[in-house]
Length: 390
Image (cartoon, rainbow, N blue to C red; front, side):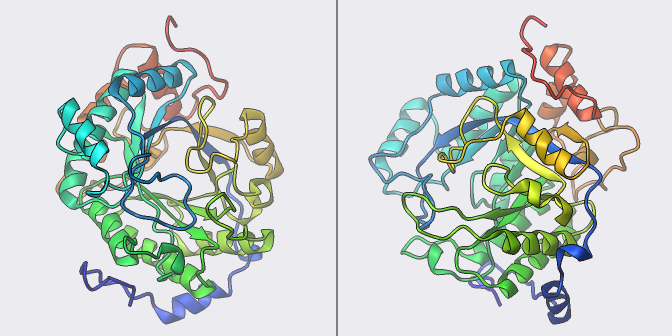
C-alpha cells in the first residue's frame, strides 16, 4: 500500500480500526512521562553529498560544493566533544553520494577508501578512540552495510519521515516510503538499536501520520530494535517555505505517537525546533541529542538550548532531567545497564545488541570510560566536566 513497498518486499498494512482509533487520540488521552532524557553529543557532518534532493533540506550540497571531513578533522571534533563532556559522536550524513559527486569519490580514493560507508567505519573507530560512542545516520542501507557498521556503532538511525508519497520527496532522485521502511527493517534484522521518526508538515495528512507511526510500531514488534521515535516539525529555511506546524497540530501528533507506540519506545521532540515545554504533557520523554559544542548542521538556523534551557523544559512538566547514552538502557549488557532496568531480549542471530568495540570503550579504565559508565548507570553528571587529566 505504500509507494515502492512491493519493490522492497515490505508487507505492512496498518489495520484500519487501529488507524481510526489513533486519529481520535488527543493529549488528554495520554499520560505524561515520569522523567525527561537527553544525550550530550557532538555533531560530525561527515559529508554533505547526498543522492536525494528533498525540497525542504538545507543539509545537502550539490556536486562540486559538497564537503567531506578529513580524518584529522573528525578526530579534532571528537576530541573537542569528549573534552566538553559529550558521550555521543553523531555522524550526520547525506545519503551515499551517487556518481555525480566525482570529487567526493576521488578524494575517498586518494585516502584509501572504496566508499563513503567504508570511511564512516573508520570515522566511528576514531570516535571510539577519542572516548565517544558513535551514532550514525547514514541514510538508506542494506542489511550487509548494517552488518558491517553495527560493529563500531552504539546505535544508528534514519528518519522514516512519512509513508505518504509527497511532492517534497520529488525529483528524479527521490526517497520512497518502501526504501525507508526497508532500511528500518534491515536494521532490525541486524540487531541495531535504532532511532527513526516522522516529519510533520511536508504535505502528509493525518491518516498518513497515523499509518507512519503504526508502520514503525509493526517493525519494532517484529525485531525489538526501535528505541525512540522522533516527532519533528518541518521549519522554513532558505530552500523551503513549508510552514511550521502550529502548536495544536504538534500536541496532537505527539499524543498520537505516544498512543501508537509501545511503552518502551521513547517519543522525542527536538528542543531547538519544537516548543518542547508545551509538549511535555503529551507524552514526550526525550529531547534527543543536544550539543554544547556544535551547531545542528541539519537545521543550522535553529540554535540548541543550553542545559538550563533543557532543565526549563523538564521543570515545565514537573519531571527530573536525566542524561543518557546514544544506546538506550535496555539494550546495554549486564554490568553496564542501570539496576532495575529490564534487558531487551537478544536480537536474532546475535549475542548482544551492543558490539564488542562499544562495550570495550565503555569498560575502559580511563576518564572517558568512567564518564560513559556514569551516564549509563543514570547518575552521570548533567554539568559537563573536562575528561582529560581527570
